[in-house]
Image (cartoon, rainbow, N blue to C red; front, top):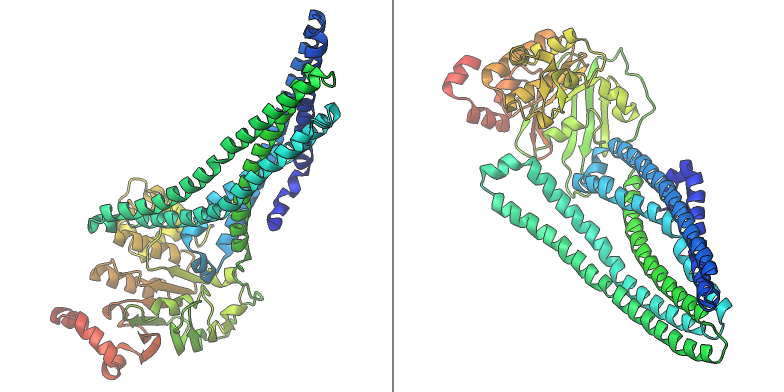
Length: 577
């Protein structure tokens, strides 16, 4: 929690004056029983209606002032808490966006969302309740006890018996429920993960008619949350009945012994009434304090989860070296090996190759052979655990990552479009791109033919995730987005899988003619897409089992030959060989 206190630095006044006004409200609340005692003893006892009206007016003034102080505190608490929450979310979101792929993989997207939303809300609520009640509740307990001692020392001994009993009940309940609140947060993570998966994969779920199974799995997850919450609720529900029972027994004792003190003349009826009110105030304050501890417990648990996220180091930035303009080798791998954090086996092992400017690198291999992993090392999404990855003669670890990625246009396996317009999506690589540059990229990516048919053309709306476009259209738009600004390197990570052979061929021809001098790294399952590559890597279980041109690999690499023969029919072979 200490790490998060820095987000309160702009709200020092609210932190000071909020509790101060709540303290004033508590003081006025402690005065009320004294006024009531005077009304009973001096007004009602002497049948003095003028005195009664005057003191009732004082009660009204005390109530109005207390209300004013409470509202002022509420305003200051809300301003501080919501300002704190806003700054925390903004900084946390910025930190999440600065995490490396490894950091994101370590936590998981569902937990990231839950910590950014649910946990920040819980901490924000903790700040709010701290300002409003952290001073008031303890002050009322201590103040009521002091006022009771001032009225009658002997009778106040009942306070010092009842208060520890109630405190013991609160402690035992808190000891049992605090760990359960932490478990509830973890169960919420699982529910969030299932929700994210189901919403993202809704088409797959419907295609396999898995709706009922997914509903049941999600039902089990929320039932776990409900079960844990109900268990906590059952234990917490004991608090009020037991506390009120102890309090009522204390009030009975006060009335019993207070009556004896009244008979002996040591206590007045008004003082006994005030005494009873102070007992009630102590109980209610203790119950509020118990609920406050629950809120703080949740807040501390959430704060620790947020702190864990902040403790994950952000993506490392190099020394901002500039690329070597005289270096002919645009991409070079030197004995590169890589393993994902926590994985036992290496995903890549001793990969070495060199690619010159303007050349095309093709990568092919079976599922899980390391193709995408290899490509992700070029823009430094992951860092090699052994060897060097060089871009324009400079180790990618020495680049400023933003500068490195400005040189690279990357198209992932899964086409991702963002809500907005086609023009908005096309400007992701280059915010200053003109419409002419965007149209040129769309033409190269074979996307202009269907975009130009839209009534709004570049202003065509894109729904969330690009749901209003087909799979092939989304792939072509994703490619066009990466081509805007003509990067030095374009990485196509199996991003032509939804294209037909004719469109795939037209795309490859356009890349060659329109982006002369741009280095293309193409991952594909189609040997026909890689035939014209200057260098083809054949990956198998993280190793490069073949390296060369299409013709060389057909002669020298059995794995490539098997892939080629499994894909090419006689007609395709005649037209493409």
